[in-house]
Image 1 (cartoon, rainbow, N blue to C red):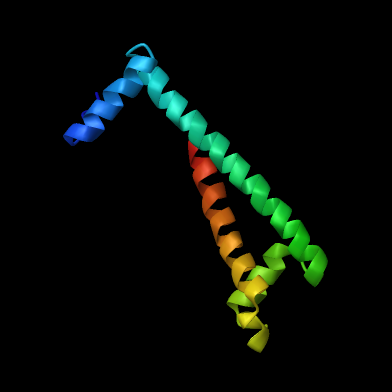
Image 2: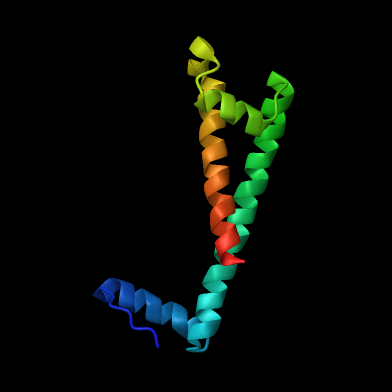
Length: 104
């Protein structure tokens, strides 16, 4: 049995959403989880496309880049805007993959 304590606004929104799923809690929760899985897969795919662009530009695989970046092996180049974005995207990618693995 699951018990939720919701503020008034959240409870109203939850009940509206539940009514769209025939008041079937399992159907609602599975729908929410399926949607999150879809969004994670879409985010992962978009990040992977960015990785291909960076890998071609800098001639290094993303995982190798991230390891070297974290170890400070790029020196002053670590302040390169691409490197900062790439490392942040890799961290997001890792978080997305971990969450996806939990949900599947």
